[in-house]
Length: 573
Ligand code: SF4
Ligand code: SF4
Image (cartoon, rainbow, N blue to C red; front, side, top):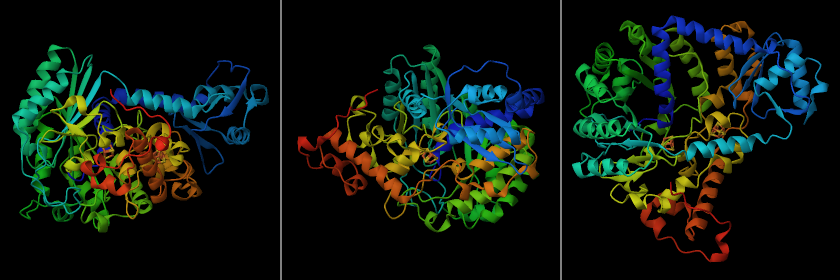
């Protein structure tokens, strides 16, 4: 799927399920809201004695001032959100100015207990950055779980102008020997507890036979060995009629991500068939059938750019006309059109500035929520950037059997990290080291970011392959709309009313979560990766070799041992 921003997929399944459950179970929705309100009002409700020791305000606290001098306080490490009265907000601001304070210096004991309980205040000696780094590394190298993104074909029947593959896509399908090698690869994983599959392409349903055969083989193996199996698919939905959805659902495909780019006219112009014909009506017909005939969750991704931003509301109207919200398993999210690879074509002209996109997206998200196409604003559960590329237990397999770490390189054989036919060599290549050596903690911008615990760098590709002249920036919408999202969540939970919003808190200017990435910071991060990989492989690797790919990297000149710098270890999960 050429235009997919894959990092979002980790929350898609969770969000779709949440929307579905809430819609079907009002009692659960009420219980959830009551629980959330309890957390928010917990500032007055805790009776536990705070330990008499020294404290400091958490580096991951994000206060949002309100119009009446009260404040919301969100912590991105614990995800705690509380409401402070004007007096409490004043006390908190005074505490935040100090490097440390003792419990005796806080007269309001209940406030201190609530702040400690929500992780807004931590022990003075706690190194929270180290805690977050440990948590990131533990998640990254977790054993027992394997995520495979499988592209049964890179062929696609659509000709979207902004596709990262460009318009000349391959037409080959995955052969049985590649499918068999994937099964053997799974079987060779000892102590496997869960297998997660994402079907991807091209348009994966153009390789449906591979999906069906591989699903059957993998499911029967997992069932026999008590390994949990789950799957989702990223599809343009051209072939996703009710019967296809049922076939997929029976093979445990529980969610589908489909791209819709505005109303009929806009979508048909942006996402036509290769023949030039429009695709909007058939896609919406198929979505309706799939929702009617199966319990599959469908998440519509809307790519927003210059030419469709004003038509997105008309698209939401079409969803309303078709009553998609009533089914409870349909949701919508918005993503910026960005040029992620040199082949991204019209994306270079289409994209809005991130500031402009994030201004527009707030209103769109609000409307989508009102219409029942999105759940209330929520931070990600784990690190949003813990994608298949960042995780040591994740791989992307192309139809030819090339193994990659990242979806965005899967169309380019020179960026493969190995072959599914040589599983023992998957971690030894220079290309593999580019991913294993990247970490958001090497970037001062990420390391000082107040939402690092829920972001984790968001997209390694944007660091590793950033181009000096032109690069999509990694920081997600939460970074651009931090205060707005915190306020929106509190408002939807009924804790604050709309008129409490203070316009001066607009995040684009106020930057409550810290500096955002720039081309310079990405270049610095890329240089750090190349330095580490050069040291690890004993070579001098430069940016030109990075973009030239496998043969140039493997032929890079050796570096003298003295230049080797710090000892680095290869990752071999
Ligand atoms: S690094 Fe690759 S796989 Fe991960 S989010 Fe970015 S594009 Fe997707
Ligand atoms: S600086 Fe940007 S990419 Fe890095 S952790 Fe923060 S939001 Fe994520």
